Structure formats: C-alpha cells, structure tokens
Image 1: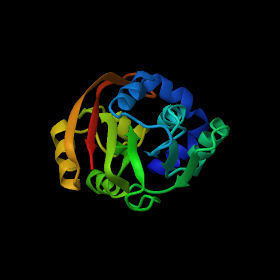
Image 2: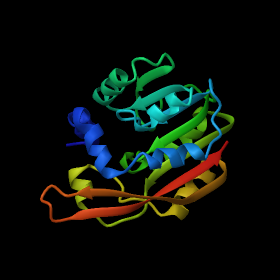
Image 3: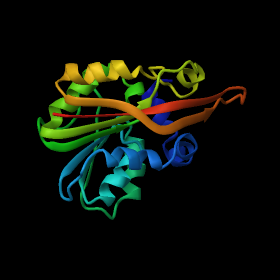
Image 4: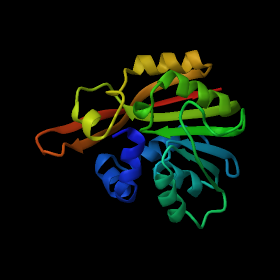
Length: 207
C-alpha cells in the first residue's frame, strides 16, 4: 500500500490516531515562530484532517489546505465548514497547486518524511511564498524505528537537523533555524512489541 492509499484509508480515524502521536502544543510552538497577521494567507501543506489548519483559521488567516488525499480533505472541510477563509486543494508535494509568490506563510507538520524528495518539496514551498514570507516545518529527528516505514508508510526515517537547514538554504530561504520542538512523537507498533518515542524538530526560515 502506498502512502496516499494509507492516508485515504485512515482518514476517518486520523484525528484519534494523531492525538496519540503528538499534542496540540506542537501546533502552538509552530505558530509562535511567526507573527501571523489576521487576513493574510497561509498554506498548510500535507494538511491531513486539519491539525495545523485549525490553528491558522483561529488566528484569522485565509488558509489553503493541500493534501494528496481527497478523503483527508473531505474530513477537514466538514470540520471547518463554518470558516469562509478555507480553500482545500488536492495536490502533490512536487507540484503544489498554488501560484508563485502568493502566500504569506507556509506550514508543514509531519509531512516531509512522507514525500519522495524533501529538497524538491522545499523548493516548491519557496516558490509559493511571497518575498518576506515565512516557512515553518515540524518533523521527526532521525531515528531507527523501522515499523513506521512498514505500518505508517513513512518514506524517511526522520532527518538530521543539519540536512534540513542545508536544504532550506539551497532552496533559497534565509535565516534558517532548526531547533528542538520540545515535543516527542510516540507510536506503538501493531504487534505491540515496539514503541517509538522520537524527538521532533521545528525548522523556520524566510524568503
């Protein structure tokens, strides 16, 4: 099963699953790194069922939520139907369905380890940002929990922070910083014999 099929299959259960992986404090940490201005536009890349989108909408932002799974976006749209500033788009990481230099912020939570090419994905995020726009990524530090690849269809076993910083700079971003998010991602294997507890990093930069 590919990553897209996996997330489409678990869309209805994802909110409960996610709550066991990491807490809302991770979203608060990501949002704290940008002084978001009400009415501005943010892109939530790999939005899933709206963990990050929720916080952005509550801040009064216009949000473009992008995900490869239409099923995930269907759940998201139902949850936040009361918000007028939400635009959901099905799209892939290497060809984001957003025009050049059109958003003030890009957020990506636990997304980079699912894409085929992190470097290409970061270049796409750079492309859609306005000059002066800010990018915030939260993801897993490098780890060795192989069951996440087989059970959750992760492409990457986390990342070295130095690699993420280098990719951001190579994509054209400036003032790149990659630090500890003071949060762990926890997941139990299906058989129950393996428990992953992985530190999470937060990366920020601007165009």
